[in-house]
Each structure stands twice: as C-alpha cells, then as structure tokens.
Image (cartoon, rainbow, N blue to C red):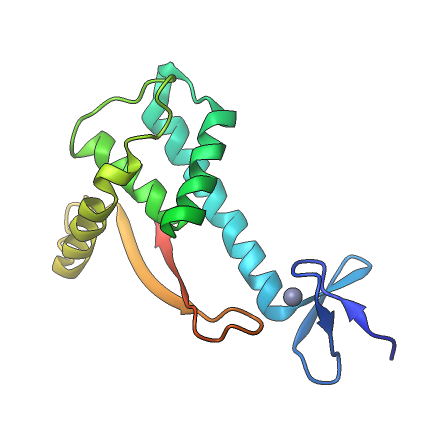
Length: 158
Ligand SMILES: [Zn+2]
C-alpha cells in the first residue's frame, strides 16, 4: 500500500494503523475529516446568526471573516462561541450590529455570553422553548503531535 497524504492536515496517513476515510479520490485521517465537517457545520450556523443579527444592516462578509479568523487565532475562540456571543449581544443586550463595525464587539461579551448560556443550560428551564442554545462542550484531541493542546467545541447550539 503506497502512503498517502491527508487532504486536511497534509501529513502522511499510515493506512495500516491510522483510522482514515476516503474523500472522493483521496484520503483523510478520520479525526481530521470529522473536525473539518464539524467546522463546516459551525461555520454554517455562525453565518445564520450573522444574517440574523445584522438584519437589514447587511453583513460585511470579508471584514467579518477576518475578524473571526483573528479571534480564533489570537483568542482561541470557537466558531460556536462567537455565534453564541453575537446572539447574546443582539437578543439579551439588545445591541444592534452595524456594517462598519462588523463583529468587533465580540471580545467584550464572549465570556459573559458563555457564562450566561452555561447557566441557562444548567437550569434547563426550556419549558417555554426559550432555551435557544443547547450547549455541549466536547473536547477533541488534535490528530497529531502536540498532545497537550485541547480544542473545545460547542455542539448542538440553536
Ligand atoms: Zn490528517
């Protein structure tokens, strides 16, 4: 069996040992592909939230994408965490989003929103269907090397 490279992380897949999946004509580590799909799903949800909170003010997608990337890289924010924060700022804090500012407000409310939804989730007071976020923290180990860094994801929100 010739060795192949993972299309997601570009590292070699040892198909004798590593769990892998076929993606079209190519291959990916199972973990890499799962992560990729999860991120796709989260991105879709984030986009839905963006459309919702900006409403008529319209989303400046280019600028927002850069902000998201920055927050992910510099603050280690998750996509769902960002989405959750935006929703919180909009629906609880009743602040509006303007095209020019993008989502620059995110770092000011990220922790507060996290706490809010954690509390809400704990209370499980969703009798009226008011619980919009069902947050489940799942820890995913990185597929290779650096076995110390954990990445956490919020699943099943909205
Ligand atoms: Zn991989």
